[in-house]
Length: 64
Image 1 (tube, rainbow, N blue to C red):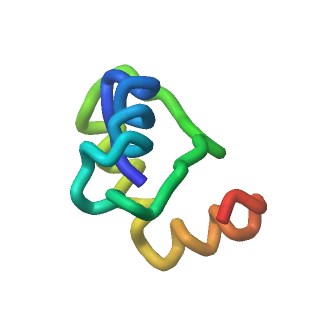
Image 2 (tube, rainbow, N blue to C red):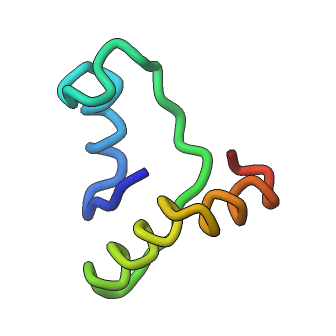
């Protein structure tokens, strides 16, 4: 989970091992994304998905 202004570049970085937190755990595939007009809105939504309620929502939609 995360937010970025350059989705394809960020996915590529994860897959080539440029991100320490995901290095060696890929390959990664994008299964869901949402777009927001502002960064604060994106961060707020990310925080929701990290919460228990957000995880339940993602599981109920078959995303996790």
